[in-house]
Each structure stands twice: as structure tokens, then as C-alpha cells.
Image (cartoon, rainbow, N blue to C red; front, side):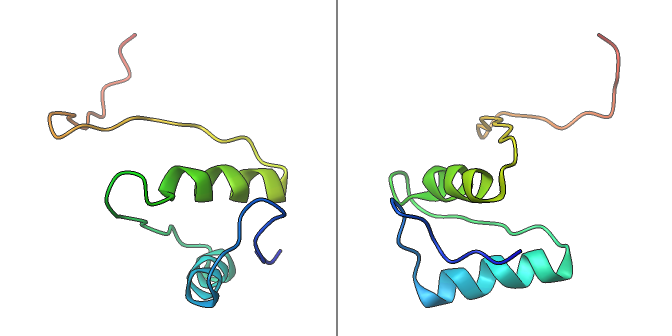
Length: 71
């Protein structure tokens, strides 16, 4: 698998390098930036190009992690 961008998403060479390194190393890729810079669009295009399901989870500054599995 190699990410080259899509018809509707043109990725920079640096971004393609970072994404492909994460894929090759089987490690997560942390993408950060101001609102509106394309982080979600990148995730959507990656999922589409690899035929994967995208799971979204909106995080706020008040979100707390938990290991509890209680329904």
C-alpha cells in the first residue's frame, strides 16, 4: 500500500512521505493543525483510497480517556 493522494485530494510530497512512513512502519500518524487545514479530509481520503472504514471520534479539551468497558 502506498498513498499518492486521490483525484480530489492533492497531497504534498512531505505529507505523502509521512503517511507512507507510518504505513510502512505500521505506526500511528499524529496530524495536528488549525481548524480547516484538512486533517479530517486527509483521514477521509486515506480511508477511501485503501477501502477502509473511517471511525470518527470528536475530541474536546474536556474529553477524558477511560479504560472502563461498562456499558
